[in-house]
Image (cartoon, rainbow, N blue to C red):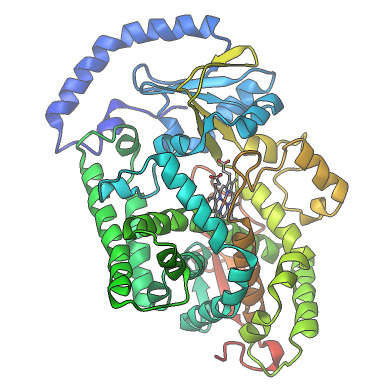
Length: 517
Ligand code: HEM
């Protein structure tokens, strides 16, 4: 089950730290017996279901195969109790049952940012580029304040036409027909929308700048390894790469901000809003880096999966098309206009409140896709939970799949069935029992939900209006049904068993060329 070896821990250091590797191996051998003894003793008395791990190192699979690993906890906790495992010197407690999840989402002493900073690590950290005096809590509060202001309905309403224009222009750059991987080209659409809404016009307007930003951004993610996250002080090659690329990313964002400030130029975008609030360049760069991280991954993966599922379900595909047609007839009946212009004339309030089919689809897609373990750290004092003690300093994880994919909560849980959300009583039940937490719950509900839903609705509406498509493999052979998402792939939840492509061609909506500018 566990595929850990000491080599895998040190693999990204070999070559630049051989002496350290020898030293570490010796230390490991010396500590093994003592730790084994400690673990066996602890298993009997501390009330936790202990998950497998290697003495001293812990359960490295939490980093390399996160979903497979936490499924061990879901199985172990099925008949009660909570699980625990070690990662180096950290304890991680995994709750999966109702009492545990109520505590996880509701307790104000569980720290959100510390959980992610230590146990996730893929997001770029400004501290890798410049020295900062702000505490993590201050950074978080600044970030949340700005997100809330920037994603208000009135602000977003103003940029709807630009968002549709961006989407349409980008789709115009694709070959008229062909085969494309949605986890690549649809992600790029989300990337651009995020930069448009939460960053700088200078970048959102320039395809070359967006490409570069995306390269740097994914570069940080690629230069993240378990060791660089858990042993940040360790001078590995991965760690150096990560620092270098974060510094490049920092400068790439800081330059246009500083230039605009120096010129006194005024633009109509998120950066301008922050400049007017008197924000430092350092704070603004921190914000943009975090916004891209929060903004693209979940939205990107969900819209890709939504388009896959819709395509495999003709009944829902037809419902979606009639919803869009009804909106167009009511709010933008002039069929001579290009489709993206017509869609952009639908008022934002209608997109938000009167698109029931899209809402059902989004909810169901999130249920089957957003199943990562959420993270916290207990920073206050020891807490008794389900017969065990979560100590001050312990980390906690709650795997969303424990609720979202449990057949006791959802009949036939792997089946994508938006219809299961049609009954308002069902929706209320899941809310009350915290069995749907795709947008978070309790102390940390998602602050980007409004924007994320709009992004997914806009992409779904424009893509399905402009293109006919089918699901194929990389050779062009039809793909039957929809594969399961690989939940170990935290950044894309890409399809299990190989990539799925869309074979697409233009749809002649409106009786005219749909891509007309
Ligand atoms: C489909 C898209 C999205 C989904 C499914 C989603 C889901 C979630 C979930 C489950 C949480 C709770 C995490 C936890 O409790 O550990 C969360 C929190 C959050 N999300 Fe989203 N999210 C999405 C898009 C976005 C976007 C576009 C933004 C804006 C940039 C955003 C900003 C945030 C923030 C700031 C928080 C943390 C709030 C806090 O610190 O209290 N999200 N999101």
